[in-house]
Amino acid sequence: MSKVLYIKASPRRDRSHSVAIADQFIDSYSKIDRYSEITIHDVFKMELPSMDGLTLAAKYNILHGRTATREEQVAWMAVESLIKEFMEADKYVFAVPMWNFGIPYKLKHYLDVIIQPGYTFSYSPDEGYKGLVLGKPAFVAYASGGEYAPGTPGEDLDYCRNYMSLALSFMGITDVRQIAVEPTLQMGAEEAAKRQEAAIEKARKMAKDF
Image (tube, rainbow, N blue to C red; front, side):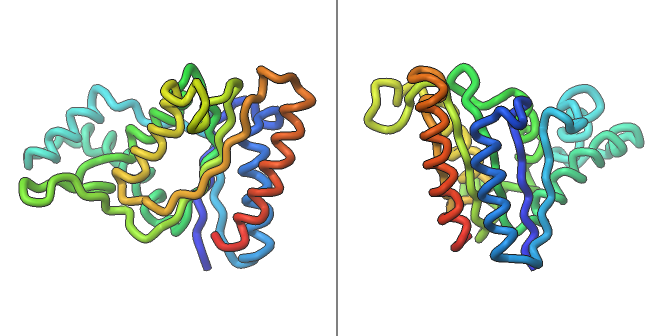
């Protein structure tokens, strides 16, 4: 049985192009792997721990081998809980819209919580940085109002796909399959709907060997 962690990063929900693609990917995958355990999180509904105050103090006390206070330990437990869930998953699915050329701030918050030394990556003077989330695939559905695909004039402005690729590979997730629907605004709603349907059909096929 595979454990799949599906992270939705759009508050538009039913009106989200990226969520529509990722939802169909999950639906197709679940029909193929009927015994899979799928956990779905909407980062805009999650109570993510703030990386400040007690939480940040706990992090640096742990990093430097100092004893954390009871309050700091309790704060850090919320971080460890999310990391544990992430590490226990076998596969990952993300729905990611582009916001101001980057990823939504709530997704950045989630990634800032789980990307922690000694948990999802390590560092040593000899090996440098090394991802600890190994041998696990990810599927990412992207959506953007404009066109930012490789070869387009907007390519250099795409800090959304570039950041997600960096964040995932930094943790050791290098098998990343992705689909982008774009533009969702520049060419009108009818064209956007056509491109979304084409992306959904592609996602359904990609789910077969996920």
